[in-house]
Image (cartoon, rainbow, N blue to C red; front, side, top):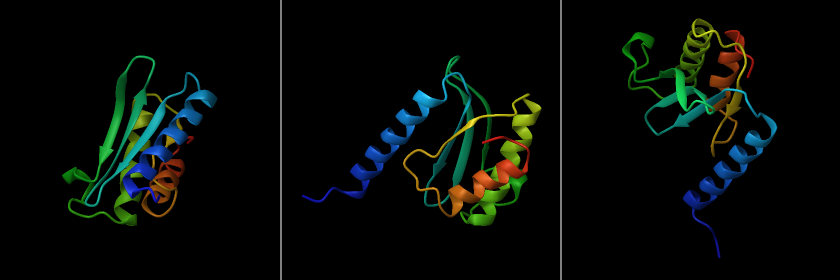
Length: 119
């Protein structure tokens, strides 16, 4: 029986997150969420349960409100790298969730790397 896209997404998200938790104990997590209209990213400290920095395409300061394309994702990636530096963070592991590392998610990760964040 064929699985629905949602079930496959949830299985992929759990598989990715569990593998990352085993390998990257004690590191901060750069979590990405992509919807049909927006993309957002958070820098999370799982030990304390706090979000240290966040960026989203919904922010008017980035100039990409209402857009969800590769350029918008790159601007969000650059913004999270700057905010992570301001918070004193230089290294985190990239949690793509159930999203494939392609297109917008890849552009966000590469822009964060170019901004100086080790992902």
